Amino acid sequence: MFKKILLPCDGSKHSIEAARVAAEIAAHHNGTVYPMVAVEYQYADSPELSEEVRGALHARIQSRAGQALQDVAGAVKQAGSGCTEGKVIEGPAAEAILKEAEDGEYDLIVMGSRGVSLDNGYDRLIGSVTERVLHRALCPVLVIRHNANPK
Image (cartoon, rainbow, N blue to C red; front, side, top):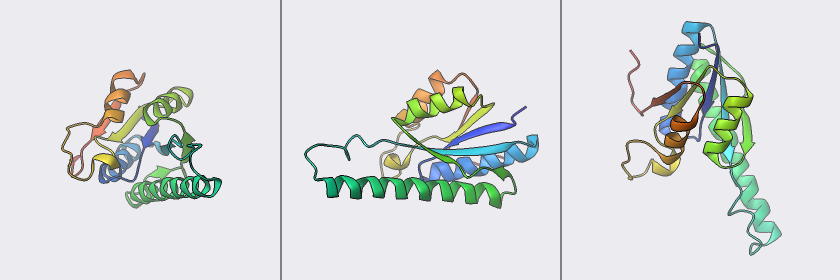
């Protein structure tokens, strides 16, 4: 049933937990997990910044995206499930996730309830990106909280 699972991630503890759950679902359904990170260069491309600063910001954003993909791929593989290397997609997070889910014809989206911007102190039940994806996705969306116990 869930052969193709999209795993949007951002490096937060919630996305790592979502990776573990996605791996369990993929293993149960003999499926594959496809991690992705959405990056947005909105502030890094400000014309008020020098070319050197813009380049450094782009490099930092790409590095963090690569690390987030590595972290979730490691969590999925550790759980013994199939996982692709993942991809970095440019654009606002919710829109990039929704477009990838539709274009890739995924069976399920598994994502954290909150992102990295909400990891430190702001206590919302669900993050704004997750909320937008949950309400607009054409396929089922499973939202995972940090320390979720899938058993």
